[in-house]
Length: 373
Image 1 (cartoon, rainbow, N blue to C red):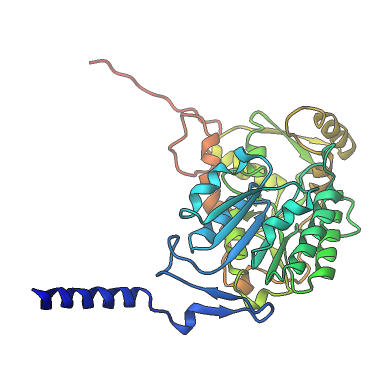
Image 2 (cartoon, rainbow, N blue to C red):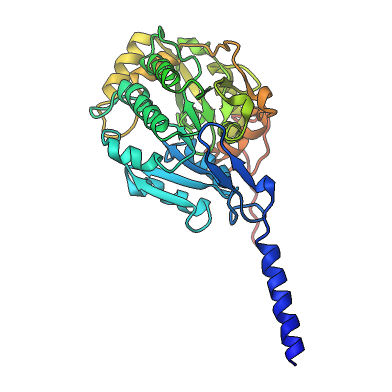
């Protein structure tokens, strides 16, 4: 019996030893900071890949998709937030203790530093589609970006990934795009190895791009005659690309322009929405000065509407500048024609909700024959 107990004890020690076994490949030493990242577990959300990542702007449209990809590989993700209700849905994206919420304020530097000091990677997704009395475009896109970059440099953060926008240009007539470009330059002056990401208009389940066009229902307003050319990109593809940048050596110090694989005018997009939703949407062209005045008036409403600067952006074609793209990350972007119906089906009426994507069905009425037994 004693011999049996000894054998059981030895077997238990062997199992424990195997469970705690480590390999040289589990240790990653940062060349920049000398920090050691230790991987544990077999992979997945219940393991740890050794990364501690702060994602500013995580409560926005793109943030949830990025955090989902980071957390399911076992990263510890710091989730800075201003309103607790805005980040509750992020808690379940990682295993217990892997999602760490921290309350911040952009004008409280100590709170920002607390969210960065233990991280090896910082994503800055902060951005505003419109200005408010509390925060201007410059406050968010330039000053906040500069403060985060300085704090990241102070605490030897290995990777800093800055979210910008397609068509960002200092000389742009859009304040949104010009301040995005200023933010890029400021971040690069502080951290030359920072990665800049410029996505085009993103679409997805909670977007403000396709949904806004589809929600117009009976009448849609065209600006610039609907001739502005854009290359909308799936938000899931952008999140996948930014996730790859975490460990991609070929992304250090580079700029990426992430766009869809096809170019459309706003007229093309409206026609596609009509075909997908089976809604007979009319449209009217509105001159830019009138559209800007209407947008300024709408901004006085207590809820989010079309901003005057968004009108300006709807006049600017998407133009690639020769920066790196999805191809350099070995990612094939999704096609709007294939994935768009997933996001637009909810705008269909009950008569057409289960119908596949068809062309030429707008205006055709279904008839139902009811029989009584």
